[in-house]
Structure formats: structure tokens, C-alpha cells
Length: 267
Image (cartoon, rainbow, N blue to C red; front, side, top):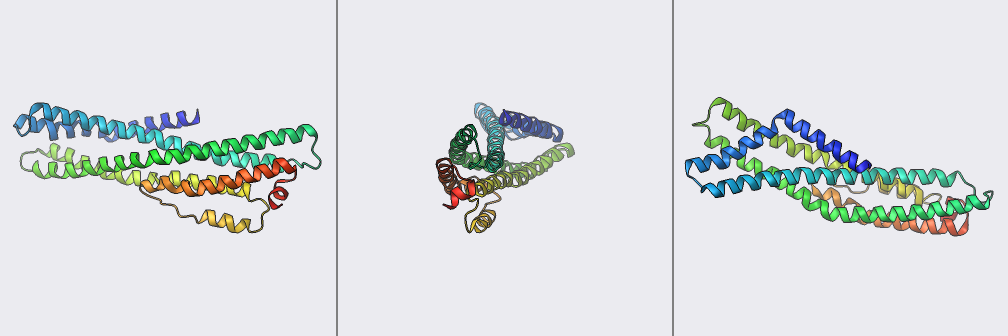
């Protein structure tokens, strides 16, 4: 539900921002100027021009909305993972198995099994998402660069015959694409940061009481993260498997020995 809400609000925000900036009008003007204008002048066949305009608008819509949904899902999973690790860490440390009743011990064991299942399930989701997120971001960049490449010739070719308003439209189109390109590059660093924070929380939970745990935490904090580009989606692949394997071992030790989390991991 959180992912759906985040995706919906992101889409509404994106739509409102682009509508306020006039990007929708610019996109229609861009399609008309590049394709229908060439059809009118006889530069390209009519059907080919309409087909190109349709493909351009369709590809732009799919890339924009799909990537927004994917980014929203990725961020929500990362935030939920971090909150889940913190919640269970607090729950486990609040119970002393030596003094716990039988019902408390059973409840703790069931909760730890549930924690292990959820962490492994989410890690698999993030791993598979990485395979899907990379090509989507690549398509977004390709679309942005393509618009930039196509806008510049349009401005240069239209200088002689275009009016001042036409030139302003084309120039705004170019600047809008540049702004979208920069905004996407900055926004892509957010999922990587959230994923790394969730890994740090899981690592803290799994390394409780282990000698050298501080060194492990520092290593997680300084883990190599690509802040830009589609490489940010691959940050979780190697790290998440190690972290959740450690969590799984910790959970098994804790539930089998009925000791405190730190003692279970230490032994």
C-alpha cells in the first residue's frame, strides 16, 4: 500500500510539475515541429511522419511512468527493510530468554523466523529489481539525450524562418530536457543511499556483540556506491547477499540457543 501511494503521489507530482513548466505543450510542439512540419514541407512521407510522432510520444510516456513506478517501489522496499530491521532489533533486545516465559520464548522464535523470511524475500526482490531497473534507467537517459540531440538542430534550422515565440518554445524545450537530465541524475542517488542505510541496519542487527562489529559497520558505511547513472541499482547485489546470509545465521543461532542476541552470535 505504501508503494502504491508513493508511486501515485510521485506520478501526480511529476505530472503537475511538467504541466506547470509547460513540458506537455512543449512535447506536442516538438512532435509537430519535427515530424508534421516535415510532412507539410514534403521532406518525409506523411505516414512515416505520423508514425514517428506516435512512437516518440508513446516511448516518452512509457519511460516516464514506468521509471517513476520502479523508483517508487525500490525506495519503499528499502525504507521498509530498514524499519523492519530496527523494529525486530528492539523487540529481541527487550526480551531476556533466561527470564522469559515459555510463551514469550515461542513468540520470540516465531518472530525471528518471520524476520528471516521477510529479509530473504526482500533481498530477492531487490536483486531481481536491479536487473529490471538498469535497462529502464538506460532508456530514460537515451530518451533525454535523444531529445537534446534532436532539439539543437531544430533550433538551428528554425532560426531563419521561426518567429520569436517559436524560438522561445524551442529554447525552452532544450532547457527543460537539460533540467530533466540533471534532476534524474541527482534523484538516482536517493535509492542507493536508502538501500545502503537499510543494509547498515541489518548489519547492526546481525553483528550484535561480535568482536570487530564496529569495523563491519564502518565498512558498510564506506561501501562503494555509485551516486549517479544506472549503476546505482547494482549496489545491493553483492552486499545484500552477504548481509542477509549473516542475518539468517544469526536468527538460526538465536532461535536454537534461546540466548540473548549478542550471546547467540558470539557463540
